Image 1 (cartoon, rainbow, N blue to C red):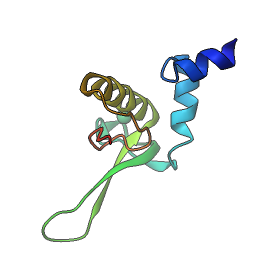
Image 2: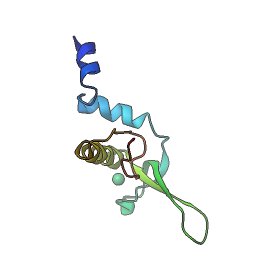
Image 3: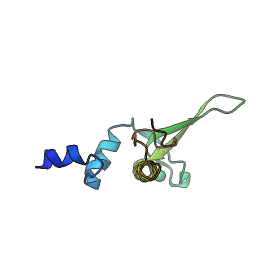
Image 4: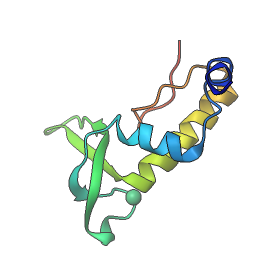
Length: 97
Ligand SMILES: [Zn+2]
């Protein structure tokens, strides 16, 4: 029954399951979260890369909590727009096709 439910309604999952699945989509390294850099070095993942007109590209890193929050926001946004939610790109708009 659980399998049938998951297929029928793939976005309706337990939040703690989502969290682990989201973690697995990213590579985690020590760094500073862009949302609260004052907290120092924590486990972070690259959520997007900024390409300044001048100079090298810069990675934007977010901690585990922030990545989960960002993914939740993107999923809500994708749902509102009626597009497919693609996790694993927290810092980018939820562009769907
Ligand atoms: Zn954070």
